[in-house]
Length: 322
Image 1: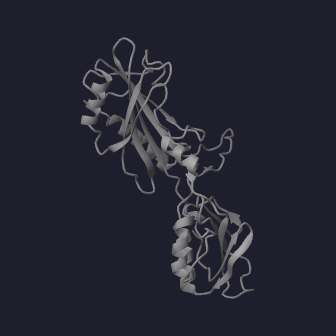
Image 2 (image 1 turned 30 degrees about the vertical axis):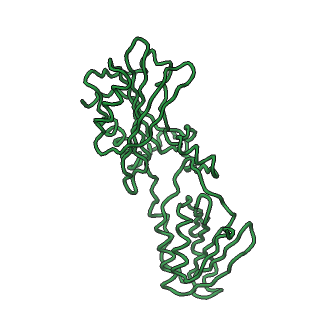
Image 3 (image 1 turned 90 degrees about the vertical axis):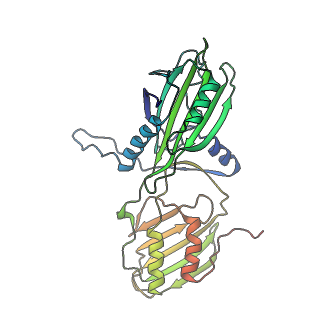
C-alpha cells in the first residue's frame, strides 16, 4: 500500500550537513561555497516577495516523491520520531544537500514486521519512476543498527536538479520497526533575462592570465559573426547555484573576454561587457554588463572548448602538461 504520510517539511539552510558523496568529493578536491544575494529585511508595509516558481515546484515535487513510498499494510504514520529508536531516526541518513535551495519533506512510521521484512517490501514495491540510489547502514554507539536505501529520479531541466527519496529502517525497543523517509529536492536558481549581454558588441579582446601574469593575448577579434557567437555562448551559461560543492584543482588561470561596441581600438573604448572565466576549479564565470557586476555564472570549463572552436584559437588554461 502507499504509505499514509504525516510529514514535516523544511528548507535546508546553507550550513546543512553534506551528503556522503559530497563529503568524499570535498576531501579529494577543493570546496566552494556559493552564496545567493542577501535578502533585505522586510519593512512595515513593504510588499512580500513572491516565492520563486522553481522553489514552489521543488516543494510540490518533494510531497509527490514522499507519497510514492510504499510500506506494508500495517504501517502506522507518526507525527513525531518513534520512541525507542535511540535517536537513530532523528535526522536523515544522508543530506539534505548543503544548499539553501534544498527542500526536505519527511515522515515517520511504526510497523510490526522486522526491519529486514520492511526493507524487502520497499525494494519489491519500488516508488514509481525511481531508480536505486544510496544504500548503507549505521551502527552508532547508543543506537540500534540502522539500514537505509534510496531512490533517485531524473532532473527536470532548468527547474529541479537533485530529486531523491531516502528511507531508514531501525528496530525499536519492544520488537516493532521504525521507519523514516526523506524526499530531498533541490531547485535551480534561474538566470534572469535581464542578466544577458545586449546586442551591439562588435569587437572582442581576449586575455588569459595565470596568477596575475599574462600567458596568452591580448587577442583582438573584430569578426562580427565570431563576436556574435561568443556573446551567444555567454548568454547561454546558467546561473551558478548557491551552496557547498566539491571542485577540482584550480591552477589559477582566468580567461578575460572584453566586448566593445566599436570595431576598432579607441571607438567605443568602454567595454559593453566583461566576462572572466575560470577554466578549472569550480568553473565560475564573473560577468559585468555596463559596469554592473552580475551574479556569477557556471560553465567556465565547458566554455573554453566552445570559444576555441568559434575563434579558431587554442586557448591556454594554465593546466600543466602531464
